[in-house]
Amino acid sequence: MTLSVGASDQKSRLHAAWDSTIGKKAVMAVTGLIMLGFLVGHLLGNLKIFFGLREFNGYAHWLRTLGEPVLHYGWALWLLRVVLVAAVVGHGVSAYQLSRRDIAARPEKYVHKKQRASYATRTMRWGGVILGLYIIWHILDLTTGTVHTGRFQEGHPYENLVGTFSHWWNNIIYMAAILSMGLHVQHGFWSMAQTLGVGSATRNGVLKATGNVLAIGLTAGFLSLPISVMTGLVS
Image (cartoon, rainbow, N blue to C red; front, side):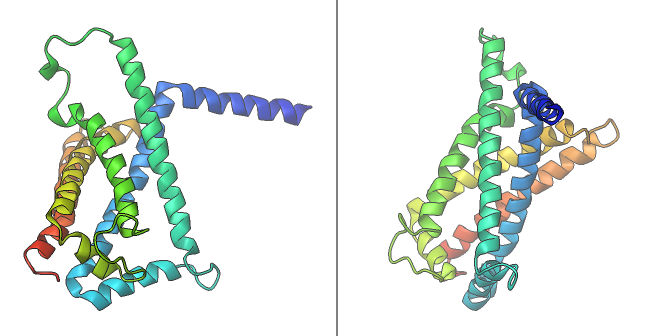
């Protein structure tokens, strides 16, 4: 009976934490940190495309052999995907619910919208939607090959990536998503630091500079991929 009551109390506390504004911001901060780590790792892996087909495809194969022989082929990669999907869903749900609360708390439109927030802040919501839609497109294009232009080759990521970026309209979709990502990281890093209690009067300048560097570095790095294919540097 005591165990049952204790479990019930713990469940109630967890529900109360999730239902609170602070709890949802904490979820956004933690999931944002997970996704930022993924972006940095993903970019470092993608930049191997500049070292040639063998290097890039070898990296992709290595991802699928992580954890062997303890884990079977591809299991570690799928675990990473599950964690990432959970982070994306948690981040998106929290953002949507906080947005609805903000609208409910301020039903009247601001007279001077420029005073409300910066450009990055005001585009966070639409940027999140754009990124969410692009993630779905990206998976269908380069993971499953469902919408891939041309002949999708399972186990040949170099050829598939070059094939995707060989079409101008794919590049426009990709670049729009990457620019949205850059704005998202710039503002999101600052918000994440404040939520996690990292910010202070002495560290705020460093945190803002770090967010800017991450946003610019990730944006430039990811944009270099379609540009290198379009210019013939990678083929």
